[in-house]
Image (tube, rainbow, N blue to C red; front, top):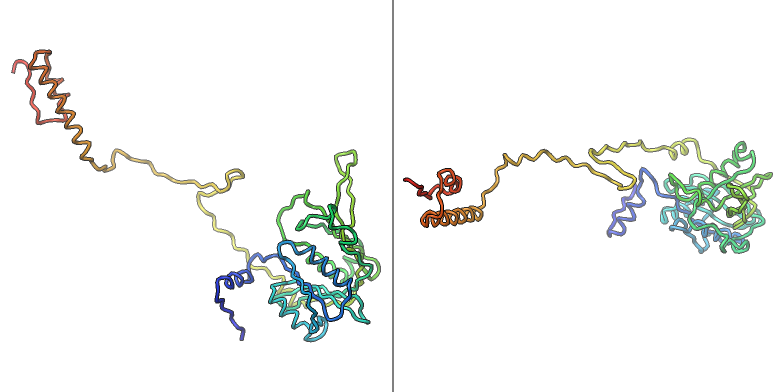
Length: 337
């Protein structure tokens, strides 16, 4: 029976929500570690891979020796799966060294925190980033999207080389995006199949003047560069591959009425306002305005009365009715009545 973990703090709740299954999964994180016996070159390889993937916290490196990890032996991947679940990493690179397999490096992928597939390679003629001066101005920008170039027919025909191609692309591609700026393509991973090994080079792309509109492209070795001898590999079973490649059904978003997007204004909404029938609306009558009208009518009546008494002018009935339409209590004295 599976143990259900209940968060006790808000921070733990947010962390569990990040690790929960999603329709669009997060970008894969890389776990780097080594065994009890290793060499300086293997440690430097792991450090260089960490340098390439550390942008945005997409790589975790352990410097402690791990003696219980033997990926290709039965039960030897238990500690590796535990660390993968602890760090939420779906990619791993394990370095080791022995007399039978010197300078050994194991690439692997996880599915549901269990080993999905892996490949073992031997490192030869290694050149680090520090040796090639990749940390200077010629180095590519951290977090930029790389290009991949695979030279050789074996990457399409040989199953082992095809498996190596899938692993390298998954390890080095970084975050999956829909669009990309071509000016940001400043590095390339070059893989050349020669015999039973792969010449692996990480180069920076530089554009030089050529006298035409199309610039001249130069590749500068930025490191790491090495030769990888393909050794053992373990591919996933057909059922496991089918389960891992299964996609969730796409749910079409419900269209929101009267809402559209604009390239300049962004999200634009349309409001519906019915016709305003002001004449039929029952408006409240303010008593303050009523008093002002009465006072104004009384002042006009007094002025007219004063004029009629002094004989300053005659007032007709029509004018009197118009002037005192708002005050029915006032009586006029017209001439001849």
